[in-house]
Image 1 (spheres, rainbow, N blue to C red):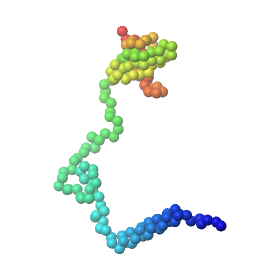
Image 2: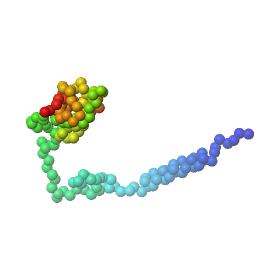
Image 3: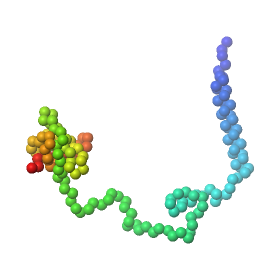
Image 4: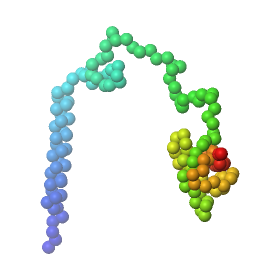
Length: 149
């Protein structure tokens, strides 16, 4: 003889679903019979700080006037002063056999990768050098590297 397809869990879920449906119907009927407030109670206002409130703004408070020209819609414009592209640094590590190393910038203390192909003359660890930066695969790389006396 075959078992019933309706299990206890299925019965409970069906009861919950029907109960929710009935509660929803009762709420709908209640809203229709007893409307809660008028249109004015549903309006939200924005106060002078940009926060939502249920009270209208005070018309006696003075509004701030903002000039259209003072609004900056993009990046900060560059100044006319030239930034020197040549940087100074110190070689913190260099491996002659593999042909790469790292240079620590003296200004911002950042460390930059340098490859032997980007050097104008031979360098070693501890040498003071001048270099330029170019974007590489994993960040900025030091190029056109030469010793500073």
